[in-house]
Structure formats: C-alpha cells, structure tokens
Amino acid sequence: MVSAIGIGAMSFSNFYGETNESESHRLMSTALDQGVTHIDTANVYGGGVSETVIGTFLAKQGARRNDLFSIASKVGIAKDPETGKRYFDNSPAYLIAELDKTLARLQLDSIDLYYIHRRDAQTSIEDVTETLVELVKSGKIKSFGFSEIAPASLRRADAIHHVAAVQSEYSLSVRSPEMGLVQTTKELGTALVAFSPVGRSLLTDNPLTLDAISGMEWLRQNPRFIEPNYSANIKAGINFRNLAADMGLSAAGLAIAWLIHKGEHIIPIPGTRSVAHFLELCEGANVSLSDTDMRIIEDTLPIGWAHGDRYSTQQWVGPEIYC
Image (cartoon, rainbow, N blue to C red; front, side, top):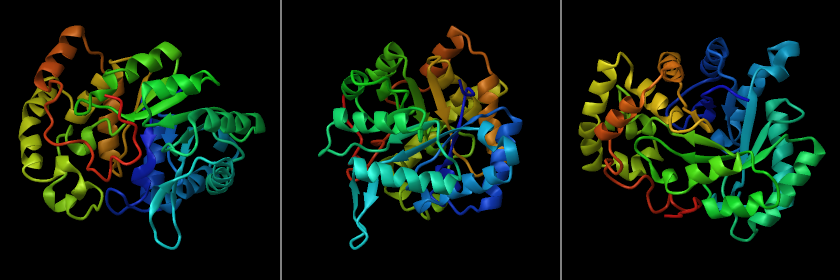
C-alpha cells in the first residue's frame, strides 16, 4: 500500500528547469509531512542525478531510511557513449548492471518497484519478464512493472508473473488509457501509475509560459506547447481553472482529485520543484468528488479537448501505441 499520490522525481534533475539538491530535499521532507510515501525516479533522469539526490536524502534519515518511501526506478533507455544516440536495451546483462548502479546511487540494498522504462524490440516481453522475476528472487527488487506498454503486452507479461504496476501518461488532457489500459490493469490487479497528471502544467492555475518553455529542450519540441496549439490549449483551460476556483480548489488539486476518482488502482505521480505547488497537488488527494462533480469536470474538459499530439514524432519512439 502506498499514499494516494506519489512524487515524480524527474523534477529532481533539470528537465523542467534548474533545481538543486537542497530544493529536492525540501520537497521530500514536505512529502513526508503530507503523508506521501511513494517516489518514482529513473536511471536516466539527469544521468543518475535524481537517484543520487534521493539517496543523499535517505542517508540523512538514519535508521528509518528504509521505511520512509516506497521507491520505484526505471531502466531500459540507454545512450551510445560515442554518438550520444538513444536506444533501448532490455537484455539481462544491461538490466542487472544498471540495477546495481541504481542501488548504489540510492544507497539502498533493494527497491520496491523496478520498471522497464521502454521496451526493446529485440527482447520479447516474456524474456524480459523472466529476467525481472530473477531480480525479485535475488532480493534486489520487490516487484516490477512496465512503462508505456499496451494492454495486450501487459497480458503477455502477466501470464509469466504478476505485474505490480504499469506507468502511463494519464490526465484530463490524455485520456487514451481509458481505451483498454485502465480496464486491463484493474482486471489484473495491477496499479496504474499516472505520470504528468496535470498535463505538464496545462491543468494548473499557472501554465508554463512560452518564455519558460523556450529553455526546456524536450517541451519546446512537444506539439501541445508549440503555437498555435499552445495558445489554444491555454484558452481551452480557462473554464477548468474557473471551475476549480468555484469549488475552492487549485486547478492542479482538482485535476489530481479527478484522476484519483477514476479508479482505486490509479496513483498519480506529479512532479514539481516547488513546495507551494506540491501542496496544491496534495490537496487533490483529500477531495471527495460526487458523480455530478465528475460529470461537470468532464463536460468542462471533454475527451479530445487538447490541441496537438501529446508527443512529437521523435518523442513517440518507444511508447506502445495501442489505439
């Protein structure tokens, strides 16, 4: 069991703007004060920076360091050291070697959840699942999952061994998981961990400005943050922000509350560098929404409201498209 929301620790690297260790440590302390017990990272976030920052925080906690967070990390995205080109590797040798590096950075003997970040087309999902089962038997991981896979792939993996979690982008601006993934994870008893639950800021009271986006390499190439889509999305979100205010909530809090109410097995993992924004996100975990509230929210931002694809052509390399 984990808290209703977790922390997406990509924000502990400089992916969405400059940050530092003390800022990330302050956020983790606030999370513990708020009862947030799940944290999600990956070996590629800042080239290991995110994992290292979590590790240094845990090292300061003394004897209770192993009992504070349920920690998840991800593996499978590799980079050619000569060309810098990204590729995917799900081979046993790579997964085992990277896990050892992850544990060293986290300063832990084991982690609760280990995801395949992206599927390697050369390695069947059955084979990679068998490798993950062996890692569970070794005691270095307690469970495993997959990121951005199709429902059909989940069923193939589940036939080998229970899959603890599937991570997917899911929010009021990305509803595609409702076309099979929400249902399949629920049926199989698999947690659906929702990243980018506030639409990379579009579902907040203060969406990122074009000026801020210009300094973010990944986001400035994303179709939803390129004109004219950007302005159209900002305009489309006005009624949602007004609705949240009428309900006495921040827009981010309402977006989180909506997602939590979509299923008991759904766990949003918002990421932020700001303690104030994190507290807005946490308020969503304490909100009770009625069926009428849910209908009004979905009428305000109906399926398909967002302008532009959620990924560019290059960004779509890796995630499994199933609908």
